Each structure stands twice: as C-alpha cells, then as structure tokens.
Image 1 (cartoon, rainbow, N blue to C red):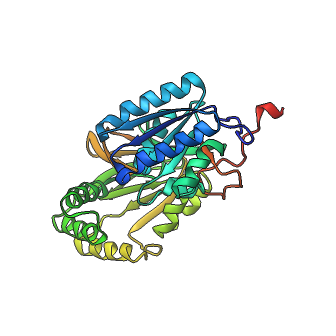
Image 2 (tube, rainbow, N blue to C red):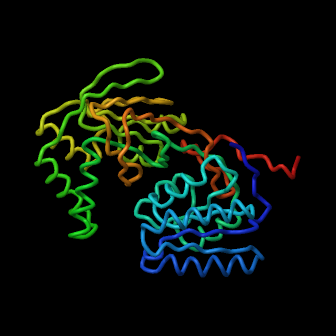
Image 3 (cartoon, rainbow, N blue to C red):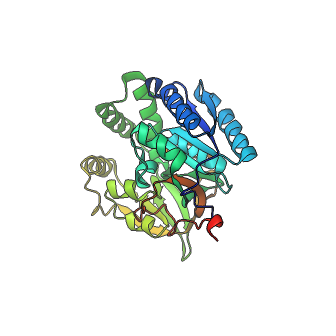
Length: 329
C-alpha cells in the first residue's frame, strides 16, 4: 500500500494510545509533552490511556476510529507487544502509525531508526515522513518481530510465570529456561510446505522472524531473509535433552551460526501442518491459541509508519522508496 509522503506537511491530528501503568508514569509524562507540542502547532490531540492491559483493545479501537474519522495519525506508546496490537488494527488502512518506544528491546523502532529517547520520538511522531513497511502474518494475525511455536511457547509461558514471581532479571530468565528444559519437551511431527516443496520433519520448535536487527542479534545467519523482505525460518531438528542443553548454552553466548541442529531458510509463504488441531503460537511475546494448519506469510507494504526523513537503512522492514507526495504531482 502506498501513502502520501508527509515530509513538509504536519499532521492534522494525533491519537495517542498507551498503557497508563507502563514505564513508571512515562505514559502520562509523554502524553502531556505530546499534547503541549500539538497545541503549539495547532494539531488536534486525543489521548486513549488503558488503565489495565485488558483495556488496550478498546482504546486501540477508539483511537483508530478517531484517526479514520479526522484523517489523523495513531501514535502507539509502549513496547513491541503494544506496537504489534496497534499495527494489527491499522494495517492495510490509510492511517499512519507513529511510535514512541518504551519497551525493553524496541526492535521495531530501532530497525526503522525511530529514536528511543522520548522527546525525540514525540517530535518525530508529528513531523516524520511516512513509509510503507512489511509485516508478518499467521492465520490472519500480525507480527512485527517474530512468531514461534512448540518449545519456545512453553519457555515464554514459564518465563512469564517466573518473572512475575521473582522479577525481570536476566538470571531469572536463564534459570527459568533451564528449569523448563529439565521438565522435558515434546517433539512434533510437522508438514512444511513452501514455494518449492512439501516435506515432513520432526521438531520441538519453529521460529519465524522478519526483523533484521533481531535476526542479526541471535546469530542465526538468516538476517539476509529480512533484507529480501522474506520470512526467516528456523526449524529445530529432533534432538536429545543433552543436545538441547548444549544448544541453550550456545545461544546464551551467541554462537548459533554454525549450529547443525538448526535448519535455516527464507520463504515468502510457509504452511505448517502440526500433529494437533490447535497450537499455542507466540507473536512478539504474546501467546495466542491458533487452529492448524498455520499459514505464515510476509505482507509487504501493509503498514504505513512515521519515520525520520533521512534515508532508512535497508532493514528488511522498509519498502525501497519513500512514497511520492500527491501534492507534488
């Protein structure tokens, strides 16, 4: 989808979506700062703060409706999970999405050179240009960083339980992983179908990424997939408990590039038929229960994102050109 380039044309209205309880009051401070900036520039401003995580879908819906009615922008403040939820609501629409990143990793924002400092991100949200970027999809659900199922979904679920109890610390995440592996894991029979072939494999886990920055960081030699605007697929082969412990330790020290137990390839679309009717799939950290088969695909140019005016590096998200301004034609 192609949108107007907003360079030289200020936003006419801003609809801010945020979790009121996140970032130790950061949402409230950012809201005030953004409201003041909008007042200075004669931009209409609306704030939609979710007091609880369960309120977020309603707030997103109201913000999207408001932006659709007045031709404005939606601004998502939060981590990659919050941004994913907003992106799913505005994908394939004419509504631009601006981002104020406040998460732990902020892969989506960093991949597009969106500033991580609050003041700079707020300024960008009203003055940046618009680029069409790509999203991942599985059974109609959006992901902006990665999707996975199998053992990884179990590890995420266990980590959530342990960090709620003991705090969000790296050592807690490592011990949670090892503890979960000790309890055992299940190998799945999977039918994989891409553009070239259909085959059956045994695997405890499948990981699919579209974010070049994250794929480069995990050292799996699939970042070129994102550069080609394709899915980067990693399939873990069947292995013993001891082999999995070794793989986990190699992952902790980022030495996975030469790991023979991990099959890697790129795909535009991948159909996976697991040996069960429903599967727990993790999309950017959020677990969903989806019906099999799982239909993964890259959705090129589906989201219009407000980014810096300078050229964005070839990250695997951005489309090749900034959209032409209709007013300049």
